[in-house]
Image 1 (spheres, rainbow, N blue to C red):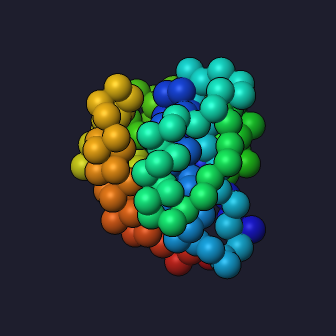
Image 2: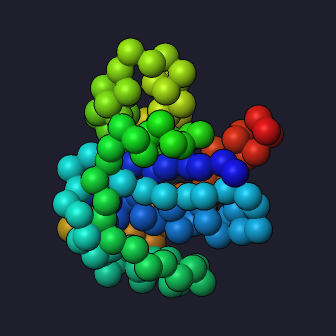
Length: 146
């Protein structure tokens, strides 16, 4: 079974949204999808705006924030980060292990995915639409690898 891990800051907006969309895309495939935050507390609820954006796409999500750990990275086959700073933090957690560092990538190869927090529901809806376009290609690479 493959494991994909999405990383953001607080694990209440971007990474849980990406996790839910990836699960929807990979429905029926032998892949475990999770998310975590580089500055997440343990157990904070997913933002209402994230849940609404997912619901508008017909995707249900239940989860809570989880702090990122080196073990989570080691257990993943692919780690997709929202920003370069998230990528840097994740790589530092597994520093000295080139194989682990190499699987920690940006979700968007063109750059950072901005945090929608405080920007209103329309920004979350736009983000969900963006994720629904980019995630299938990003996770397909993992499927082709195996």
